[in-house]
Length: 217
Ligand code: SAH
Image (cartoon, rainbow, N blue to C red):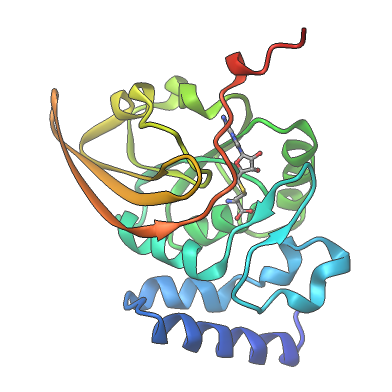
């Protein structure tokens, strides 16, 4: 896997663009500079890696738009060493950005082909998730709960209770909520039974699919 000076130049331009769109956190911008997005793209779409757009990966899913990745990561804002659960591994790009920031990342994917691919890619990269889990993100991942942060990278029709339960007190859930388009939402667990919710603008994600809805009849 190569990272040429041309790739790095394009990445710098992309990061300037994201900054001009309002991302301020220098740690997030630096992580975007350090993780080569072209390594996570479908090879046939490689030349578009530094366009600020979502692109198809396998199984009808997409690698998120870089601005969206930066936006969610900025909202998450935790300390190095904190534990993060990501729902929707997809290409592994967002996962790597989180690891680059020093977080301990657990990531869940429900599409077998993407789960398998991400295992292969992380074997070759320096960014290593603590665990890659094949499963339904609506359940979170109770085995390693609680988490300082949970980030959902697919559009959820509602906020799954299981995810709220797996946050530490003071922990944050970043989740796009809505069916056709989504409001970026941050929920902070303020005590054992209390949560604060804020919303931050509209986005479009592929849906967070609930497995018990997909009956094979
Ligand atoms: N972070 C990824 C985004 C991929 S798109 C990236 O930047 O590449 C969203 C991902 O969520 C898809 O891979 C999709 O298969 C996955 N997904 C959808 N519903 C899910 C669920 N219930 N549990 C886990 N993953 C899910």
